[in-house]
Structure formats: structure tokens, C-alpha cells
Amino acid sequence: MIAKFIRDTHDLLAVADKAKARLISFLGYVPALETSVFAEVFLREAMLEPKYNFSDRLNTTDLEALTLIKFREVLLTKGLKAALTPLFLRRT
Image (cartoon, rainbow, N blue to C red; front, side, top):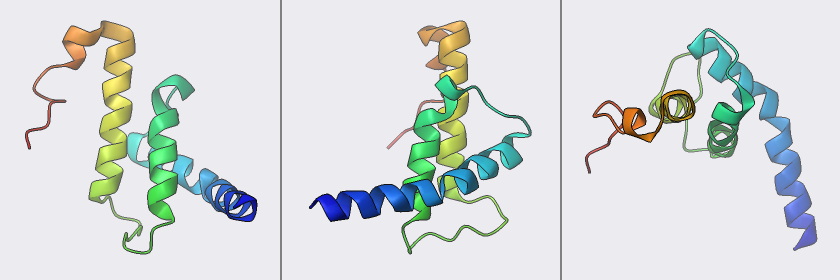
């Protein structure tokens, strides 16, 4: 159990720089840590899944991570009411 935790942690750290660089390349700027930390972890975990393709092109997983960053930026700068605009609400 401990060995699996160490292996998983090592794998997540191995893709950390790739995930951050991917987000920066699509955003065009370096987001603040408080707005990007959850998106970075989400993207790291997705990058370890073999079912996802992370080529140079934007994919739906990238869009989810980018939306999370943008949502948190609006939430932290303009408040909850502004963050809950139809742009950020997902219909299921």
C-alpha cells in the first residue's frame, strides 16, 4: 500500500512540469497558484490515464482545466455572483 502511494506520487510529480507548461501555453500567461492548483492536479491525473490523448492540440480535458482556472480567477477577483454567470454553469 505504501509502495503504491510512493509510485503514484512519483508518477504525478513526473508530469507536473508538463501539465503546468501545457496550461501556460494555452492560457498565454502564468496563472496564480491559488487559481491554478486544482486544475494542475486534475490535469496531472488525466495525463497519467492512457485513455486520454495529449498531443499539441487542445482537448476536452484541457478545456475543463482551463475553465476551472478562469472560474477561480473570476471567483477570487469579482466574487461568487460574477463567477456563477451562464458562461461557467454547465448543464447536464
